Image (cartoon, rainbow, N blue to C red; front, side, top):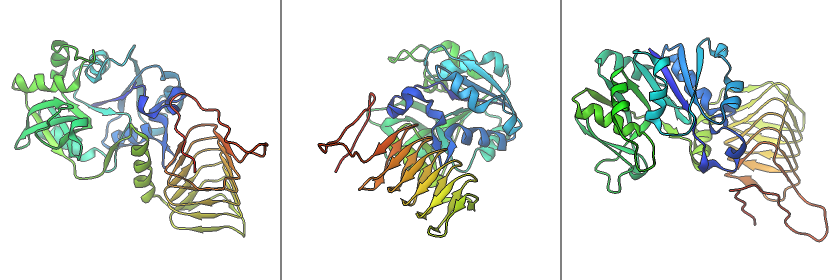
Length: 354
């Protein structure tokens, strides 16, 4: 069995961060989102993995490499434009051949993994298996209608959903999916929709089963979803304090401080993850915060936030919270006169002041 990870999306809802970075590499609990999917696939016993990439191919391939880190084989499949999930399947046929496969959206996190779900698909010998979850806002997802566990209808983002069962970003197919993707037409978005391809299988009497997951999952397409994912994954943090902690600092709760990080005259209250090369001085880092490589924070307070690599934060009077801060951002108290807010912000930035 093979796996296909889709990592070609532009991440428009996460701009300005995704103007310069792949959304699948944004760190959640100091691990790139994409790595959670790779680890789930490996745990399921799959070693041959294709990654569909777009404009961020260079960045993703640099981070992931050939798969040696996970003892798997990675093949990159270039998609010239984001033309839909079914289009990604279509262009991947040479890689997939006629083997059954898992398709995993690279910006999704499924906390419990997919091992048991892959085993269920193999045991049932169905033509497709889709994952579903009960959601409060089904109109924002593909929605399934069931007869027992058999899928009878799929509707993409319905105005009046008939169920609250949304498609989770993991699908399993056998080779019949290629017949489907060759016979569907582009949607109004000019994309080949995977929901249309699955509906084709249903209409042709191929067997499409569902599995309703009860564990936690998240499509991390929006800032608030990323912060929730960060909170959930930090809750299971393995404690490891390998950095330098001075005698005036206090550490409590689940905290991971990597080797090469320095904590000086500060309070760290977990769950918190601090990566190597970071320096925290005379500051407070509160629960559900992750701080990525080589970031420095001085005389400031941060809580419930994701701080990416090589940021500099200093001298702030108010606490930063519920925030997603991109690479190499500088936030500091200005000493210039007259007193004023002075910003240099990219497209799609958001700022809240007090």
